[in-house]
Amino acid sequence: MRKFYTLLSREVRSYFYSPIAYVVLVFFLFLAGVDFYFQLSFMNGKPVGYSVQEAFFNSVFFWFAFVLIFPLITMRLFAEEFKLGTIEPLMTAPVRDWQVVLAKFFGALVFYLILWLPTLLYFWIFQLVTHQPAANSMGAYFGAYLMLLLLGMFYLSIGCLASTLTKNQIVAAIISFCVITLHFFSGLISFIVQEVTSSTRQLLGYFSAIEQMGTLSRGEIDTRPIVLYVSMTIVMLTLTYQAFQARKWRL
Amino acid sequence: MIKVENLTKRYAGQPAIQDLNFEVGKGEIMGFLGPNGAGKSTTMRILSSFMPPTSGRASIAGFDIFEQSLQARAHLGYMPENVPLYNDMRVTEYLDYRAALKGVPHRRVAERVGDVKELCGLKDVEKKIIGALSKGYRQRVGLADALVHEPDLLILDEPTSGLDPNQIRQVRDLIKNLGKQHTILLSTHILPEVEMTCSRVIIINRGRIEACDTPENLLGRIRTAGGVVVEAKVGNDDGAEELRKIAGVRDVTASVDGDWQIFALRVEANTDVREEVYRLASARHWTLRELSQRRATLEDVFVEITHPDEA
Image 1 (cartoon, chains in turn purple, green):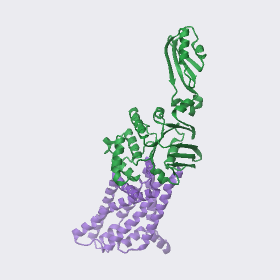
Image 2 (spheres, rainbow over the protein chains, first blue to last red):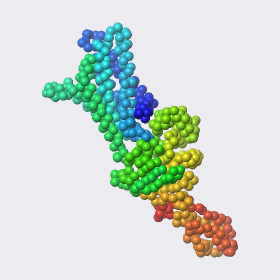
Image 3 (cartoon, rainbow over the protein chains, first blue to last red):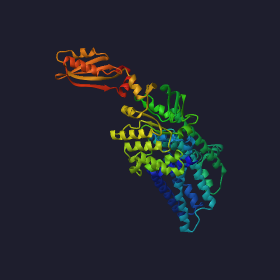
């Protein structure tokens, strides 16, 4: 277990060694800030039927920033080690392959969670200034951040897999970006295409991150996305583990 | 300490190494010699469990590298060719991380890292970022990393490549000292280094072991054990013809330098013909300016074994 923690702490720290962490943080916080600002100005203009917190997590800005950060966070995980050759000292140390894969995944997850921490401040400040709650209930906060964690886990595991497939970080980023947007937009089809039957629409709805976020951020804790994303993350990490092991036979 | 049996590795059907068999005993410094692409790095990468062999077995400290890879790796300090390092970490930070990763007990990490920094001369750069270090220092960080968990065995892939002569000397001395407590397998192109540091040498060519012996025995085995250079004024004599008559001389080539003639004699192994040459010269009243023996070096052995036609 100590080796896992050693690997994990290096992974988390390595984000802050390179400029990537700061670029991603600034980019993300800028878009989240713009999102929050516009939602508030809009709600100032006319009465709406949803809370500030719901508006924040269901806007176009939010989703735009959301799908972009995963390739940035995960592209270097394995690809950089392959490129620099540091995979050689790493894998000739007495560590197991799964320890490395899990440490990289959880390292990315920790960084991803750090990215979200400042957004908690938004709602706190809102309450402080307006003396009104930003959400309808505590459950709504819980649901929204649970959805962030679930979808984040799934998209990060896709990024991990993409990064094991190549030693080129750009290629890794493009692969994960394509797969993530593909998944994301498959959930949008039911909004865009008119001539889908209701059963297809229903099926696509199960995969629709936007619909799930809508439900969870209202505070309705639906267990279906929990099962879906936890199991999909496990599948993706298993594939990552296999792809990572396959490197030995490709050499 | 290392036992290798019928080790074979093929890349896409192309054999990189074929049927290697050798053993390295405890406390030995084994040199691994061979031209580029002979299979040195491949062998070392297999021994360090970085990649699996196509067939054959190998064990380190009694642990099979495939079945008991983790234990084998725990007994091994490996320094890969070109020393890949995390460029954005600081030296001490990197060594702390590596020590923990290799299972050095928590309370001993600081002590071990301090020791290897001292040993490898890293004290004055310990706070620097690795990416900013010169090649020589990077090499030393790699060596410190290989040593930090006090392994029984060190595998060093070209530890002196890319260093300047002073640095090479430092690393060589370091390796010699390490040889007192560790078993070492090192690969190199620099032949004097092997002669000076290694107790045994494996010469590998095109994926096969061509020779495995002590440097002295290898020198003895060579077809021509070196040569003798004679510079003399021979008057009207045919110097080359006369010298060729001496027993033990296989061949003479002559060249002219002003009034002087320079003869290069190739002689049989383990014979010294200088006395005979002197007698001949004094009997014929030649004026001698140089009479010297060139000792065969490992370089000759290397060239003869890896390029038999040009020797």
